[in-house]
Length: 265
Image (cartoon, rainbow, N blue to C red; front, side, top):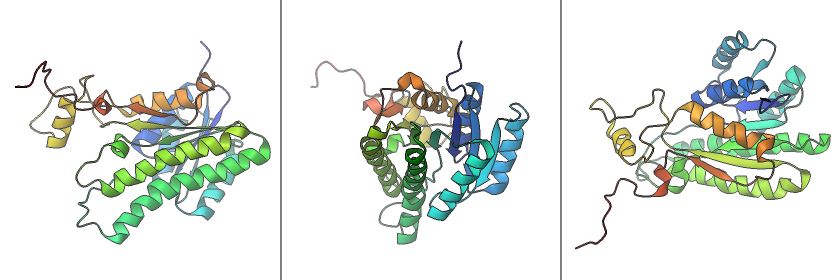
């Protein structure tokens, strides 16, 4: 069977993180070459070295702060020098602190929007400018979150930043579509290092409550998200742009853990 991303070059931000690494592994499996980008130079070099043992000659690592325009332009140039101009961008970078709105500081608020929203805008902007100049019909996949459309205590800045990523995905899709550039997003549900299928006394109450409301009956894995990203990045979704694909096990469907009731008395 033909590999989904054969011959493609992908730039994956947050490449040293859980979602970034899993997405990179899936892209490599599907025939792409991958440039990992991360603010943590040591971590991204380590991940690059580990994956290079399995996929020699198919990887490169760059580092920089996605929220700073000069860094973004520089590491995109470094990516091009290493493996050629990427024709796929995946933004998996992000921070997700939790703090009540009555307690959040201006610095905390701004830092979340700087990384999650401005960082996504800058990478999309910089790569799209290069694509338009070079005539590349590229594909961008942003990582949003189920939190973008589901408010929860302590998530004002995080949920707000991801809601902004979703509307920005729509706007980039409309502005870049005439250039043949597609822009989509994946909105994950609860993703853990170790998939849970049953509630546990050792788990955080939030995890147990979410698991109870997940129709599929388990938490997500980073690979679940990476597979969705690979589909949206590939030619198999060539008429899809501006989409927000919810990969949540069904938690986004509403109050899924409510009992079935034909009549309330």
